[in-house]
Amino acid sequence: MNSKELGKKSILTKLGGQKFIVLLVVIVLFAFFAVASPDFRKYTTVLSILDYSYYIVLMAIGVTFPLITAGVDLSIGTGLICYSLAGGYLVVQCGWPVGLGMLVSVLFGIAIGALNGVLISIMELPPFLATLCTCMITRGLGSICSKSFGISWPAASAPGGWFRSIFKVTLGNTKYPLGFLWILLIVAAMAFVLNHTRIGRYTIAIGSNKEAAVLSGINVKFYHIMAYVISGFFAGLASIAYSAVFATVQPGTGAGFELEAIGGAIIGGVSATGGAGSIEGALIGVFVICLLKTGLPFVGLQANWQQIITGLVLIGAVLVDIIKKRREAK
Image 1: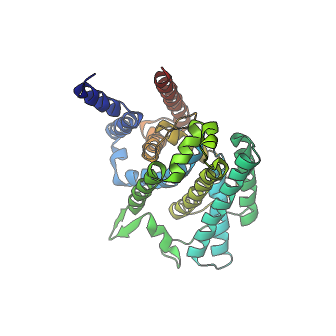
Image 2: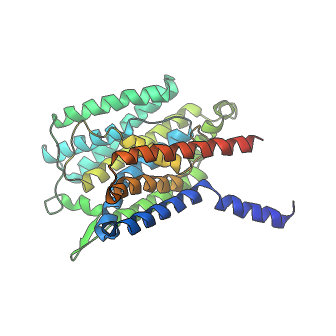
């Protein structure tokens, strides 16, 4: 095969990549809902989609690392609510500064992430079981932290409400999605971490072949733990995004958020069996889920259809991954 044919094959490979296909799906979905419903084309709808996407995207960025190690983190959904309730209680009930409450939320997330990493890497519990346990723990802790009451972080017009403008700023009579710019910067930074730093390369090595990683001298236990610490860190950031976007945080909620984040990451190209994935792919995959959740009611379908369709899309994404790995093995 000559260089011209190789170049053509490389281009076709890029164009046929899963990320490109999913991006096309996002464009087609948006166009379909926009044509089917004039209300969907409103600026307020776009803002609503972005508001919903922030915390899901942040969780998806974090959970990409455990997924690449061939693990999973089921604690991020209920954890998000727990961290938000804990930080919010300190701000609202104890009078702590908002910035300190946000820091507590993130540190809480890191602590649970580290616990997951120790349970999985040191104590060798299966990732599904370990993170399912911490999922239940964070759900209970959230209710304890808030004494089973909903927590409302300061409103935008109240003292301390400045943190809400991190994600959406109002100039004149128009609201602008500032959070989307932050998301793009975070995605770019974490894509660099995954592809060009030791922790990213070792995460991929662990997921590709854990035994080979050990034999090559990689401190597998440490970097395995760090994958879950990163997941917990981003769950903590997601709790801040959730608190900034929604008026009240209710205890006992959050179950299912992790499935949307994990589903978005897998749809975006993170391998279901570990060893491969991308941060930008996770971003695009999450928008498929967000568009389905927001757009289906505009065309007269119940929200339950979003779960069915998302499940079917996930099956398709996993099948693509299986077919791709079989071709690479030949």
